[in-house]
Length: 314
Image (cartoon, rainbow, N blue to C red; front, side):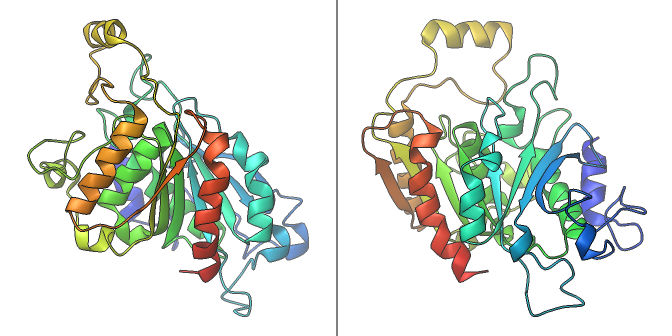
């Protein structure tokens, strides 16, 4: 399946990604029917054609969207903010808080969904590492962007904005390492077990073998050119699970490639910032006072950071 994801990023049929034969697009549907076919405003969860295990939701503000820039270039393309879910797989924000943000900024919102159990019945973490035995979630997102680019040509998909918190923050900062050229700005929130820019440790602890694992070079010069926010609650000081839990997980589940959580998220975020700074990469480090490990309570800080970059454009 992972080879199919790779092929979908390299090959196309009739000018579009694999699986897009005869697919409707906003360029070939009359504009007056776009809402009737659910192509603007809230778009239903769509299965990724090359790997239906992965799906995605979209919010495309109708009044701000140019359905066919090739025919009408006056509107340009709408920026795209990619929202990466956490371990709980909730994407409810695309139906609530992110809607007024998208309308006022303006931008569209893309929320990919990587279900639990993709790499076996007990799997909840594989998407965060970007690779496992049966999943390359990095290529999965790239394939989603290919599909969205083809069906919604009025969205800017070459350079996207990204936000992720907790498990979503784990995915986001690892994607940043491998694909800085696909990002315009990023907010990384409270990843409990980050990957450091450490060339003495293998992935996902460090980046020593990243080129072997992903066939990608970690380019710190490109990463350093991006606006990067690190955000964490000032009270995000509790560990997920105690020592007994992590020992049990390792014995029963194998623990995957991620290590036990030995530092609080506040501590690990400080370490991540130091790792980036040591590589010459500047970040905006926001500690939100009085907030524990709560995505909703840091969201205002995240959106205040991203909005001017989105409005500035790519």
